[in-house]
Amino acid sequence: MDLLIACGLDLVFGDPHWLPHPVRFIGALIKRLENALHSAIHRLAPTDNHTGRISRASLEKAAGFVLLSGTAGITVGIAALLLWAAEKVHPLLFHTVNIYLLYTSLAAKCLAAEAMKVYRSLTGKNLRKAREQLAMLVGRDTRELPEAEIIRGVVETTAENTVDGVLSPLFFALMGSLLGGGWGAVAVYAFKAVSTLDSMVGYKNEKYLHLGMASARADDLANYIPARISGMLLPLAAFFTGKSMKNSIRILFRDHRNHPSPNSPWPESAVAGALGVRLGGLGRYEGVVVQKPYIGDATRDFRPEDIPAAVRIMIAAEMLFVLAAFAVGAALTAGTAPAGWGVPTI
Image (cartoon, rainbow, N blue to C red):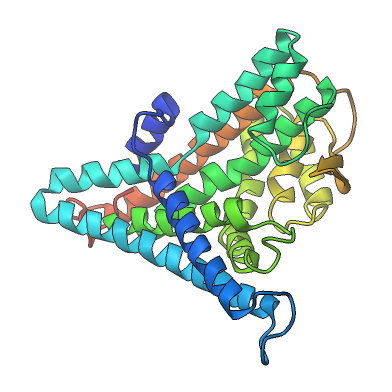
């Protein structure tokens, strides 16, 4: 029940700026650890040359593992401590903290709101504003993008973040809850630590190529199963939102390997097929033009309405997952006492 309440809160309220958000703490923690590790690396290897038998690249890879372990360990420890302390005070406080942690791990409303900002700018014929809003969602250069490319960018990031920001947190909440009520939130924040690390240091540029390697690979691993679950849920979500489930499945099977990432093409191909559009192609990142494999068929031109359609598919996929999770939780908790650390809290 805690997870159902958390999903409802996310869909209604999203992420109010006034509410303290654990991900902001994780981001600040990462920055402090990263700065400390950079200082240590610079002292041990001030240049790119080898120092003794250890190269700077090797030091950065080791530091990246320390950054990953430290961030995840501290985040998980604090989440577990909060839930343990809350349970000692009162069961109601335990559920309140549990719901808060689950709620703040989800990003469906926030993603939908940001996508719809771009949609409203496009329908208002304000391309400049739409480009600026898209730049808040993606890593590519958006300053000269035409309308079709702006729409493509929003559809791609909505599809990809259906896994990162919605299905993966739900998956870890469910898996953790099988161990007991509080462990769902603990597992979610282990994932959020990895996900936040990837968003901050998981880049293949000069600064983070080695330091961010461990975080990027951990993020790939964490999203591996949820991405494939999206391949089952998104075609169903397409059906319930009036889009083509048949074409979603067809493109999913054909194009789910068409991407450098092992996970992104699963939701992107399912959504591309559902909408009947082609994703991928050229993009400019930090001034460098990158050609990504195409996903889907260009059966028609992009339309602004593709953005709310992608958002509806994302929300429907979340609801389908929650219904499945509730069914699992109901089966597991049938005849048990109220949930605490030893009983699943779905």
